[in-house]
Image (cartoon, rainbow, N blue to C red):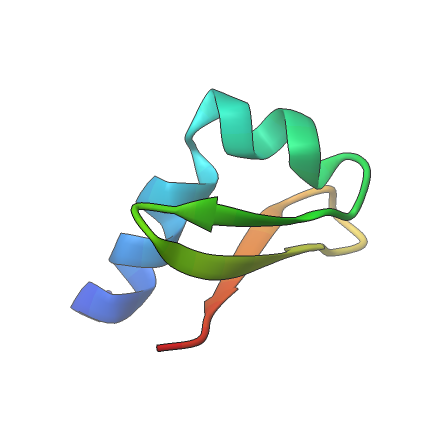
Length: 50
């Protein structure tokens, strides 16, 4: 698995981020804006814009 993908999964596993993700919110993780996407399988995905 690519390191950048693993990084995003670790961010998605953050419970505070997960609770906001259920509402489709954009959150900040370590000063980076993170868009939360929940796919059809209810798996969390993150897109980080640097």
